[in-house]
Amino acid sequence: MSNSTITLQQVVNFASTHADLLPLAGVGGYQDEPALSLCNDALSDLISDPNDWKFNRTEMAMLVTCPNKIDQLFAGACIFSLGSTTQGWGIDLASANAITVSGGTVTVNTLENHRFAVGDTIYMIGVTMTTGTTSAYNSTFTDNGSSSSWSGGWVITAIGTKSISFAHTTGQNNSDVGGAPGITNFGYATSACFQEMNNTSSPPNIQPCTVYRELPFVSRVANPDRLSVIADLGTGVLKIRYGMVPGSTTWGAKIVYQAKAPLKVALTDTWAPFPDNFSAVYRQALLYRMYRYLNDPKADNEFKKLEQEIMKVQGTDDAEATDVHLQPEESLMSNDYWGWW
Image (cartoon, rainbow, N blue to C red; front, side, top):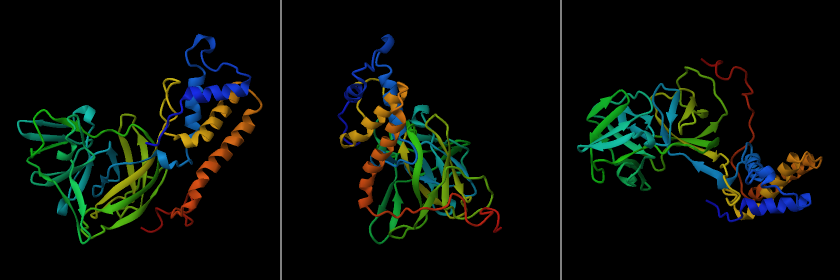
């Protein structure tokens, strides 16, 4: 995380000097209020679409698609197979004891009814364990410059509707508990790509993916070139939809997102995730919120200043070339989904 040492209180003090030292905390006997709420509002203003802050980007673990399945649930960890039975499924939450070890057998619970069979070799990524032994439960992808491959798989010995089991290996111990970490800070997706799972070339076959706010539910099967986070279920689980429906070629989706604004609980908290060198932008955001709270006519002008400050700060990225370009919200051809069946 970017370095952040400036506290909310410091910026509240600064804002107060713009309002004739009017107290912004402890008003009416309420501790830290309205200053604390104004700071949280300011962060929400800053961390919102279309502001794509580089320091606030987070990359999800890979989610592997499943043939003929358009929607998938994902909580940050995935279990998948390769070869003739290639398919992927989201692992249930660690808080729900999704991975347990007992009697030398590891049991993994999935978020949805899976299609694995006894004898399939499975791999896992994104797993977190309460014992901290994540390396014993996560498979490894390697690329030596001439070929790429996955290693660290396990052979399924038993299955349930939403569970699979296999014999434990080195580092996997009885009483271990874990699962998916949960994606609790999702704000909005900003970019993504697809990696072909059965491609062993170096580098592996990777294709770009367009992220949409929403996608219609369709039944056409084809290589997907877009995805959407349809819903945040509020439990650490996201619902992800592809366009089109993934077919026999299985892909690993890599999604990058902006983390949502953190909730500050005391004026002693810092302005993280904003680093100290971005202090000008959150100072201006708080000034705007303060004037709005005071019903001061200056609020509209302060908001314009905030927009200018954001543009100035993000303008530093102009020194870097980008391969992201403007594109229409809808296809320039009508019936994008329906015209070529």
